[in-house]
Length: 604
Image 1 (spheres, rainbow, N blue to C red):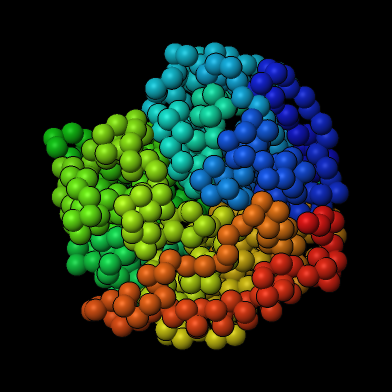
Image 2: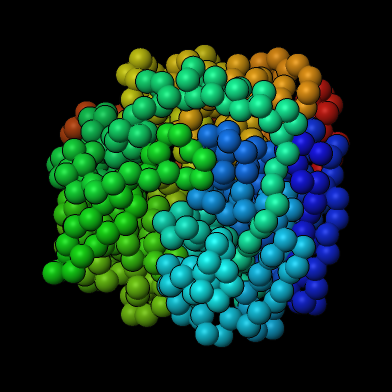
């Protein structure tokens, strides 16, 4: 069997048993891998309406078909579950080398259910799976866990682990691998902690078959030369995501001081130019030709701080959103989140909210915008639920509600918003509202057209714009929902600006027959609609935005996006158009005709 290993590993933590079953190849052909195959397995494996904290709620690790091959950026893993943060579907993607190693061990996917009686490490060595006690690793930070696994298991071991935040079941705790790579959003780390699963370790000695290896290698060289090592992708190698700080700030879309402004006066101190001054080297994930990872080093409070990142989202939410323009403090905050196992988007959001509540005299958390000393102490307090961290661990929605100001929580469906304010990038309003995992920029990126490319006024949106959000047009800087769904089913990195045309080339190799661009996008549409069905089954909230974004009173008084508000009537009109173009009814439910057209074999 080419590309796929054809095996799914099942791990029951409660019973302490494992089993291997064949991968459903009919589903693989229909949904490819990654996000698509994850969703199809989740529909079957997640009991309808299950409590996200129940042992029956599985954590699923899914590879893509090209993991373990020479296809650039394809070494990523997707982790999925019913989110303990939002109560709906969530997936999170992580690079590094775990996914190829899992394929080398002989598995396309791992389904983890149950709850271990004691802290546990699962060790996978090819066809041998062990449950080992994890008592000595409890409380360890993520880099220490990985170092211990290389010593205790195998020098070449690849590890997925949680830090103290996961053990404490912080709702936005993440999963770490290769030290600096995080499956960040949706609380997968919290669910691992609840299952008493400290780490999953894999060591594989097999290989991945690609059919005619020489022909496939020639194809990879061609892809690299014509489509990957090009100007469209070089920004990721040369500067990485910090390059976004200046254009987003210039558009008035950079979340500043808990979203009270869209322009940060200290942006030049934490922009790409500032980070390049402390960059020491470049890094790349397994078999990646782009090499986007920036390794920085600086000092804070007399101590050396070094590591990969921070990426733009961390700079936006933990920097500008907290009023922090001290690059050394921001590096330290990012390092702490990495080691403790905290998603930086949610952490920066809740810290910014606490600062806002303090500044407005609503409740004094001892945190103020721009004050560094108290700011850098917060990640550890949250991860240990100590002091103010016990309340901040509630997350932005619950914390704002507790103090009677839900309008100050910038989240959608319980997931904190990333670093693009719709008042400066209107297309993100529909993107956030309709994202299948809550507030997220990874499903569609109209900011690329509205701000980065500068080809569309940020305050103008019409049916044509909605069509781009739905289908996506990479030539205009968009990665729409259908396009992102198929891209993340192949699990290609977002930093490869791949097009349907290029996916056609890869899928022809995968299945041995011709594809068309329309067929590729249709697979993406199938995946997106299945995700919608899953969320409807679980009781997804209305597609909506924080009220602050609608009202004229919420518009900024100054800056590039001054006076702009999304407007509730305008938003509702956009949503009606979105549902129509999706083939969904007025409540956002896919029609029978649409499901039949897409060949989706499940129903509510």
